Image 1 (cartoon, rainbow, N blue to C red):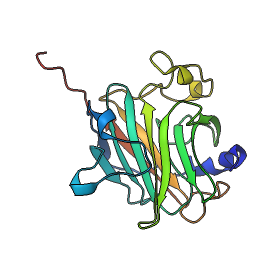
Image 2: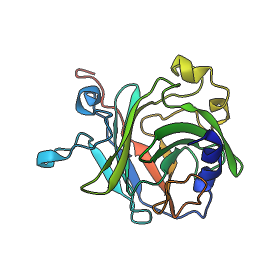
Image 3: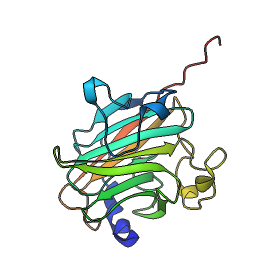
Length: 219
């Protein structure tokens, strides 16, 4: 699967704006121990590894997430083996910071991209950015999922070294995610084919807010 084909796929984040309720991403100081980026969202015995979860009716995609002092822990699930992704920071593709994954019987991948108009530029593969991630397909349920531990700050001061010096990420609309603030995000996928040349079959624009971080005891 080539990066060129990936470029064509991320027409994924163009489309019309749809009003949605605001999702809240919970804070959990123990997310590092709670979540594991293994391509499988653990919900056994009614205890998910993620404190927050939503299923988007427009795309059928499920997002599970939580954050700690430095990282956003996020899982994105869809049915089938096609490409799918989440864009952060804008309601349109332009200047959105995007995570796009794909799964085939021969290869898998997760890329970080930044939108530019109706196209985009690859900031890097998840591996090249030093991210902990995985993507997997469950034969029993037909669900493909990617999980990734992503920095709350990806541009400028406070960003990890691989992000702070990345020229592509300098073009993103926001430098990162701050607790208490409201953000747009985009979900898109193609459920019929894993080819990244294919246009999305489903797309949705939503809003989320990072929960306020509680003050330490005694303050």
